[in-house]
Amino acid sequence: MWEVLTEARADRHALLVNVGGGVLTDLGGFCAALYKRGISFVQVPTTLLAQVDASVGGKTGVDFLGFKNQLGVFQEPMAVCIEPRFLQTLDPRQLKAGYAEIVKHWLIADAAAFARNRRIGILVDDWTPLIQESVALKQRIVAQDPLESGLRKLLNFGHTVGHALESYLLTQPGREILHGEAVAAGMICEAWLSHHRGLLSDLELDQIETFLFSIYDKVQFVTLETEAIADFARQDKKNAGSTINCTLLEGIGQGVYNQPVTVAEIAESLRYYHRL
View 1 (cartoon, rainbow, N blue to C red):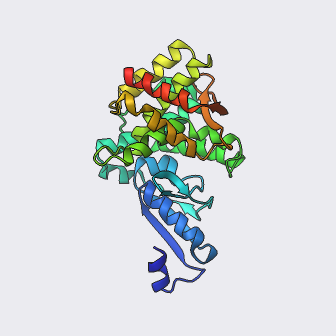
View 2: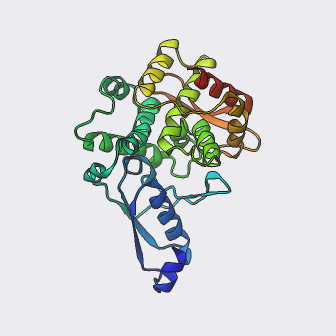
């Protein structure tokens, strides 16, 4: 992209419009933020995941050496233009992947929405209200902590284990999964970690598991892989030195960030998920 911009003689007043899913909006935003020390860009997300999560909040990034979003910057776009009709072009698997981020928002900050929607599931006629609510919730959190020094870390629920699982399977040709599928599995693992620490009740853990498994197929791996998967969490961006920081739940609708977990605990959560 930098080569194309250079060959086109784009100057510092150029505007880059990124039309596509989360990978493309992240990549485009990252390239715009660095080109000539920064040009303006607009995000036009075309997938549900990009509309409710990836394109909102000013995070940009690219994978590096097999690790998720290892390189990136915080750079707000000039605008984010969300058109729900793009979702008509998606297959069910892509819709489910985006829906995982909506569920994440409910679990960390909106218990009433989770209670209301878990009986409906993904059978949605009009995505507009759900997108608007999800974007508004994320924007409220980002406005209070734009550079993810504290509160914004809530948005990483499901991602410590999820990113580790996603990154590991990316190294296994033919076993790759979508980001939202990894996050759904990660939310079950991190809900179990919350329960294991006495933060989440039996009933709440069961509700989360039952709901997510009603939508998402189980991610396949073997027990012998759990340590190798968990080891990827050592590169998680929320970590402080050798401490792996995770976002857990103190109940449905109440996330709590900066919870230290060990690689062994992550591996145990993956073994729990494998047994379900």
